[in-house]
Length: 143
Image (cartoon, rainbow, N blue to C red; front, top):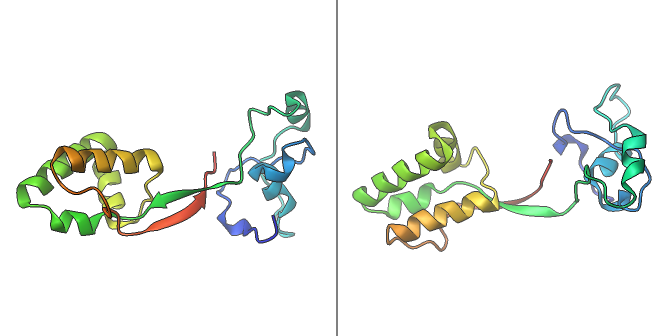
């Protein structure tokens, strides 16, 4: 992966130096290959653990990007007062108050599973569920 930006690697993300069959598409190995010279310490997978996997590593982290939604304030403005209150109540019940408000503003990105929840709640309220997010961004899943 040529245009890899190491600054997006989260703190505490495990790196891997094994040269297994999945190394070319594994974020753990890609992060290891792009370690900045000034990094003295990083979390590292013990090499013999990766070697035991033989192509089916349980620590494998694919380098495919996932589309995250960013904010849903615009759709709330289009709801009636009653719908907006019901939507807020249900979403706080599903994701918690802090996550709801951070997600609504776009400070917290919504993964595909939570996007489905938002759309489902909107449909149940009789509101349109297309174009319900303020924007999208494609990111790696760092797990």
